Image (cartoon, rainbow, N blue to C red; front, top):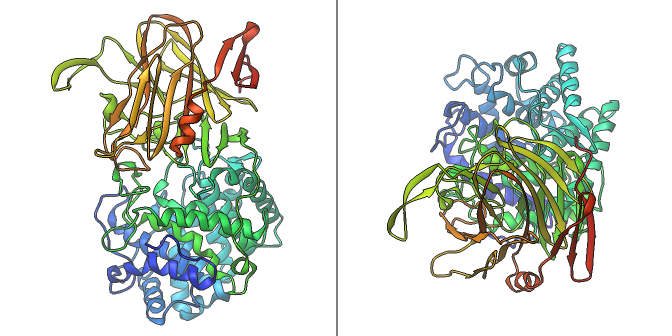
Length: 626
């Protein structure tokens, strides 16, 4: 893959669309009504995944309609004709409540609406009615109360544009549920039990901006545009200078779909940043992704993040789900002489080194090219796969990502980077250490449900209760590139406490230099620097326990990773711990910063002082909690 490609014209983006989607052509059904490319299971069944693949191509093919060759175009039209025909063997089936088909309908109708309805006009009156009959159940059936409500909005609006009547109450109910998700400051929560994640940019705001163009006279269109502008101010901080976006939350296999928000911004005509700035954000992110191993031997997108990693995926991810990233190609609906294509890429505009996002309980920092999300945690049930890992670690890095477990017994299997875990000391597992059979403490409990959230300019904080009567409260303090963690622990019995920093690739034959001693664990390597240190004042330092985690656990590297860690057994009672974590992809820079560590002092009345060279600040840990 040419990750240095010049994305300076409409034709260049179209060629990228072809690179990603043309390899699918041999796998279309002869009727055109699906793409058959199933190599793994999916919760809704691989028959529906054939529709999913067909539809997700349309997020790009619809905007690119004027550039597509006639054969592909006719294959798509044939697919729509046969897929909506109940008498055809490849019929897509009836849309039911909470149906994956609902997710795939908007791309289909939107592609028919684009270009003044050019594709829509290719169907006979009878075929048009057939299409409408197929989509109409979506408006009536129940679906999740988060971003899916926009499917009703977009489909209902386009159906009306085509001259068909709908029940306005269905649309009104959807708008009401969307408003119930809005938190303020440009941020949505994805349903009453959901989280704040990338469904903000590539779902809520993307669909809101589409609607604002479909219905420019509606007052809510102005509201959606205003919210998108507000969100853009925060969203700038999710990118590092090298183009990497922060890996956080679910559906990470959609990859550069995260930048489709900026495509919708340009397409809708709102300009929260200069055109060249937006082009730079999109292009750097594209090049970063195109430099990763994200295609299989057939040239088709894999399931995973920076490589094929099936264990990362969601139950709703089929082999064709990654085609969601075609949303970025909304740009192809713009004319070739649009200001976006003519603009010169610009660097990231000046940003504060630290950005508080209260509505998500985030602090995001930028440190010499390294972007880190300091995560206070979000309240809500853990009903998505690997919620603890995707939503509740202490930090997520543009360079080191995060890791996911293979099992929950040994540290090497759990790969619990940027976390604190506790273990009952009376729970052991039988294993082999240095080729000798031995019993070790096993089964970790890690942060999941959080309460008492606080977002402050100086820290983010929350509390979790692993076992009834036991709790841990953590304050995360960004401090000149460091993450300072202050932990207040209350135990009713004895527990082992294990805490970690960022995982660093450590492949055999290219292993880094590990330094451990006096309560600190670190590694330097060509991949960068990562370390953790016990900064608890006036206490015996915790024991260092850096480990090599199993391969295929980190989202940024399939290699084994070194994970710096410290641990100690604590008796029942109250304990206060202070931890310093620092990491950087530039090895020499990171090692230099590591030489001078913060000094932490506990003061009276709940105050804590932090000092690093000439830099000093005080924070108060007695907060107004929410």
